[in-house]
Image (tube, rainbow, N blue to C red; front, side):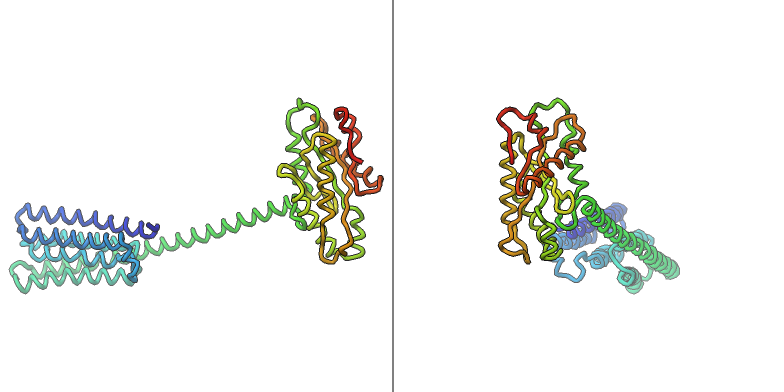
Length: 380
């Protein structure tokens, strides 16, 4: 059942609970001899059928076909009919007073669901119902009516109904104000969360390639190298710097727009070429920082070959088909206990050597090679 229907059913059950109180009053009149059994049974059957009908309409979803699916006004008015019937047959004039109180309870039931106009309509119907009963008794059994007392009672009843309507409409207005403010607050919170996400994105992502930026890449590297110093050889973290060869020529010959497209396509190619546990971020300009899952020179050579092959397939609109991208890659291993800046310095030194050796190659830092087990010398 939809949430709105559950709420309507809950309110209807609450209304039924109020009529249980009215039924207790009627039973007390019967016990006191102010109402005979026949009229008591009529009341019980009537109130049961009316309440049951409203519950059935909601359970069957037939109420959704009505203009007012909550049926609040109808419930307040129709459940007054059995009470009106009993009011007519109560032998003492004072016996009608409790039913006036029950009428007030019924009107209160509509406070949270009806607007001011409909509340006034319901109050008018309830008041006319009461006065109608008094006039009917006055016509058929005038000895049971004290006109002065009934006039004062009717006037007081009217004043109470008007006050309830005013207070109820004021409460409903406050509820609407709170609901609207909550909605605006929720919308504002949603916008703030979106803005925070955008700020986090700007702070951690490169705006052109959408890769993690230099700061994020270094943070990722710091997290991976923050483990205990007692880690067996070979090193557990392989760090690489990749530089696109002669990228300045791309900008000079084909324009910066083409250069930007190349950087975006290179970024996608690197992401596709890397394994799930590996990482790539834009280090700056045409340089990229990579964290590879390699623990030996042979594994580094395989990873570098995989990356260089992916770059060779990169194309961009405005870039001649014959133009093949190449890259120089400097690689080293982080050794536990080493300063991270020292690791990056060795990586940069290896990248410089790759450029000196003619580019389009990968060079493993000599310091790392010397620490590798025998037979794992690699890369040229």
